[in-house]
Amino acid sequence: GFEVQTMRLGGLTCRLKEVQEEIRQCLKKEVFYMEEVEAKALPFAYMEKYDMRTLVYNRWDHIVTPSVME
Image (cartoon, rainbow, N blue to C red; front, side):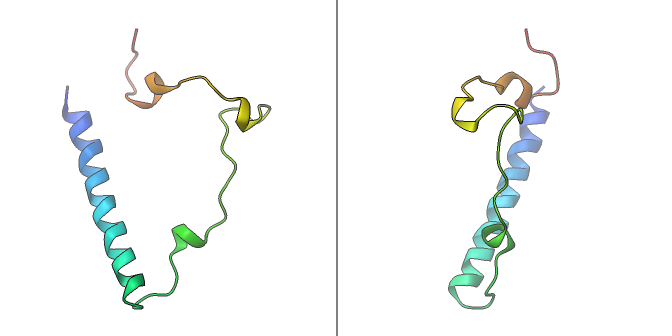
């Protein structure tokens, strides 16, 4: 059902509001550090043996829902 999308969109909405507030605080100099910005970015790859530049396959069917899609 659509309840899965409702939860995902609701979670995204909450996160966007949190980030908006964090950015507002930085702009007003209320905080001077944002962990998300300062943290070192981790390498991204589905499988370690592949170079990120060669990853071209789509995993949408695994991301969108835990259910099996045929």
